[in-house]
Length: 213
Image (cartoon, rainbow, N blue to C red):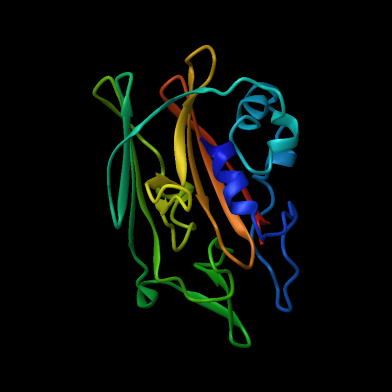
């Protein structure tokens, strides 16, 4: 599914796997990038569906995934195999945060960089990532998602006009890991996030930005 999305998005766009050059300071973290991953098994899995892993994923079999079962302007839900994932967005309330600027460009929110239309004040943020496995709720810390701004969960397929997701939920071959994926396409350089769940515990996130511009 994401490979098809990749081909659609690349029409008329330049693929760049490095962060775009800015004329103001960039405080977005690079420590969670795909290229810096040391976990070989997780890296191999992510290569099958992420944009930045596409070269390493060539020829690999796709991972098992679950379908979208509900969506709206501010949420999307995937369900199947006793697993339910819901991603939600909410308004960004600037007066509730500490904002740092370089001239007219926003460079930090609450003392750190953020993702999504970097340099501008966000309109929305990812407000919740909810995961249940066989009825058990798996805690995903707010710090793992609140710095992702202006998310868009669906798009209209140019070929058939059908609504499709900007993301997915995937399973490792042994079934022990769940990968929750979200892509945000932006003209100035897109971002993508994968939240990694291992043995019903949040493990880490993988974040890349500055491509598909």
